[in-house]
Amino acid sequence: MAPSPSGLLLTWIVIQTLPTFSPAIAEALGVNWGRAASHPLPAETAVQILKANGITKVKLLEADPEALESLSGSNIDVTVGIPDSMLRSLNSSLKAAQSWVHDNITRYFAEGSSRVRIQKRFGNGPLHIANTCIHRYVLVGDEPFLETYGMEFYPFLVGAATNIQTALAKANFAKEIKVAIPCSFDAIQSESGMPPRGNFRTDINETMVQVLKFLSHHQSPLFVTISPFQSYLQNKNVSLDAALFKENVGPSHVASKSSFELIYETLESALSSAGFPELDIIIGRIGWPTDGAANATPSNAEVFLKGLVEHLKGKSGNLPQSKKPPPQTYIMSLLDEDKRDVASGNFERHWGVFTFDGQAKYHVDFGQGSRKMVNGQNVHYLPSKWCVVNNNKDLSNATAQASYACSASDCSAMSRGGSCFDIGWPGNISYAFNSYYQQNSQNADGCDFGGLGLITTVDPSVGTCRFFVQLSTSVSVSLHTYDLLHWLASPLVSILLWLLGGVDWE
Image (tube, rainbow, N blue to C red; front, side):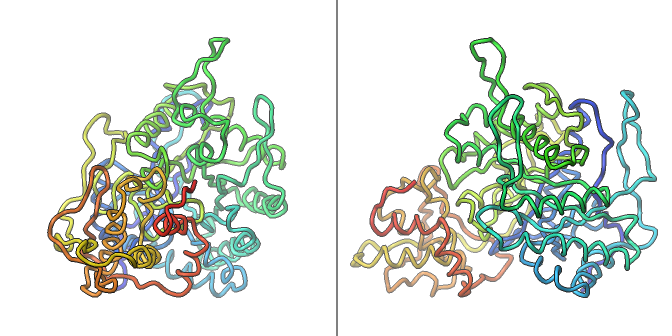
């Protein structure tokens, strides 16, 4: 059945520039919601989680019909993204852009639909509510400038954005909906000095200037990814305390700046260097993963998000010298996604504030204060069955079978520092078997592994290593040839090396 357009608010709220971070900024806190899962949580359950926890803004990583339908009438402000994989076709075909606009915009925007309240601040006075100014954005691309992707996507970015803008105009949405473009965390290079000086990477500089010209011409913001976690992983000079907003007092008894502050100021410096100092910035993605890498834990994630919220409220850290703090911030992410690309690291599948089945991992203040987070309700699981290795069999071929299992499922929790990294042998074999078994919706053939698998009703979870039971909401997704080739080039190969030979990998 075609989604109903009534009541759906596909909006990006633009908040007028504030002179400093203030409590009003916290009210512009939203989440990213991706559905790259083998068995995605039903969209209506995810929307229930959003509403129950006071989350009023969500950024869809791509236009998902089920998600859009479930958001209808929710009064949740929605940002819709276009995945990187579509950029080439949208760049080469205006017709493709018009088709996308029709399928994902026009059908969800009924003429005369309810307007969204826009928060504005007049001078330094109190907040006022206006009902007449609506700005909606389509976000072209997910992470097109990510360095690990090379030139795979960004050469098509401006052309795709131009065609989407033209398609919106032809559909009479040009005045209501603007096109925005994202910038990945590694698109900026920092230089030494205080305050930080920055520039865009040399390999993308020419395209980035074209992007900034496009955004400036259409008065659209730049959506940016800020990732103190990845900065910490990649830079030995970045301390964990700085990444987690923990204040460090230096010899001069002055608190040092957090990673977030330094990255944000470097971004502003890069925009100034490129000639666009006044361009609006929206933090489209920021968060802390909870598994798949060292220090990717729920406790650290809670500390980070608490520090971020306090910082945006202006209650901690050194306030940036920026004249234009971010009017909106979107946390990465609502839920874990076991099919999310791991080009940047295995932690990419563990950004969720909630687990894949909608259970809160830690507390985030979305305006509810200290009130406990509300989990997803009436979640339906497959039967309480797991697949483990049969210890009574000859296990000489077990590691090869486990390698195959991981190639077609999610073994990211077994990464170094992950929750299942140190469960030992043959526990790691069982984890791989169960991951594949659940990925295939507990099909009996999914626990064969040459006769080495054994189905059990006894939960094999050990300590913090959870052997999960998958949701019953979707059929399993088989591994395609493209997925296998992508896996072979991904960080997950490290897991297989560890299983096969006990290699000490970083």
